[in-house]
Figure 1 (tube, one colour):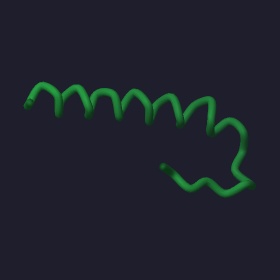
Figure 2 (tube, rainbow, N blue to C red; figure 1 turned 135 degrees about the vertical axis):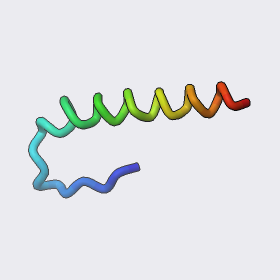
Figure 3 (spheres, rainbow, N blue to C red; figure 1 turned 180 degrees about the vertical axis):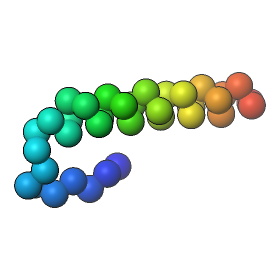
Figure 4 (cartoon, rainbow, N blue to C red; figure 1 turned 90 degrees about the vertical axis):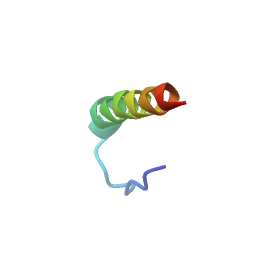
Length: 35
């Protein structure tokens, strides 16, 4: 989904990925509620 440079710190996967996952889940949930 997101293009991350190979130089990016490994911390990205541990923090940002989790936050993005939570955001995406909330977005999908809202879309599902709209039917």
